Image 1 (cartoon, one colour):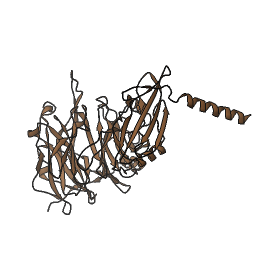
Image 2 (image 1 turned 90 degrees about the vertical axis):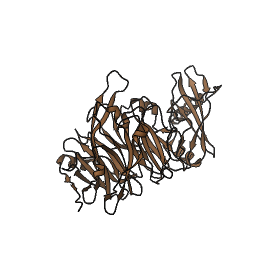
Image 3 (image 1 turned 120 degrees about the horizontal axis):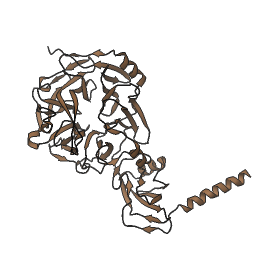
Image 4 (image 1 turned 90 degrees about the horizontal axis):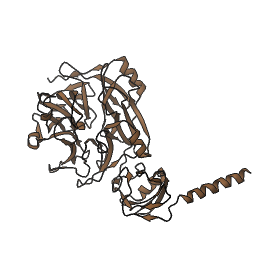
Length: 491
């Protein structure tokens, strides 16, 4: 009897699967209304499956066939396109440098099948072998604290795990987690508020420092590692918020002061330069991949928040000598804010030394709050610059970082609704041509992105999984023992 029951159940399953296969299909000459918009994007081999929803209230079932230009075929059907991970990875590997053709059929609630116009996703010849991404998830509110967390995500699957959350260190706010050129064995972040401190982690060992001295105005933030790992640059500033009334703009974030310092992570000494501690506001340091140049942005001091619209940052650089830990004697301006009547911030050099990506907005040294913030690209071989039209949107695009091989970048964009920042990835070739970005894949993306009340910010690639002892962080944060840094004697 059990065997008969089993066979009957199997027969019912087969019958059910047959009844949900497309039949008497009505052809339509429009692309399927899918979320996310993956039509025409370029992806790396081995990325997590690009699951998608057909966003149409009349549709109750979808059937998707994916065929590779170099061979292979996979199939998914159900309430959404949910692809088997192993099959997806195998198909992308088989079609590296080629393309995937998607045939999407949808059944409406009356039982009629419609076949949409086929669309293509390209599989890049450039690999993306990094393990994943790190990022901070934070509600897009305006309070200090709350359910803030730093997370990591395996980009080859849907696995996300917490590195450090506010529930682990209650009442503390932390920001700007930074690895060294995608190497998470060197890691820093800044804890704000009572008992705050700067974390330096090397090969799993945590050190918590007090980077505020009598010669500096505040502790360090907005960090960037020297490629040697011996130094880490920080901005010294204070962040404030002002709110608009009766306009479409909600908030203006600004800094009342700004300097730049470099920490020698071996001796716990600060390296200072009068050229980086002026009356102007210096912010967002970034070392070149050879370690010989420090990029940063600087704006003239204004009476903020009253003169918020006059904050315009120029993009500058100064030389740095790793052997002596000293800076050059002059600052070079790469993009002059007066000439552009714009604000240029968040310079990020590609690790192969070819490109410099930065953010351009009409004003502000805090571009994540600017609706017109766009990504721009400078060719470091000839100095030419251009907006990255292929990646930019009508909403905020900022917080960009490079993959370890410099052929991919991630950035935070508010293009979906103008409020929540989400992560997008795009590739760049040797000529500087950029592909259409794609939203970080999720299983059942419509449900995920429309139910999660967090914004993503400060994303970065990591070559391998971040290993971090949150219990040790709790112990050190609350025992409030800090290594006091000192300013290096210039004699």
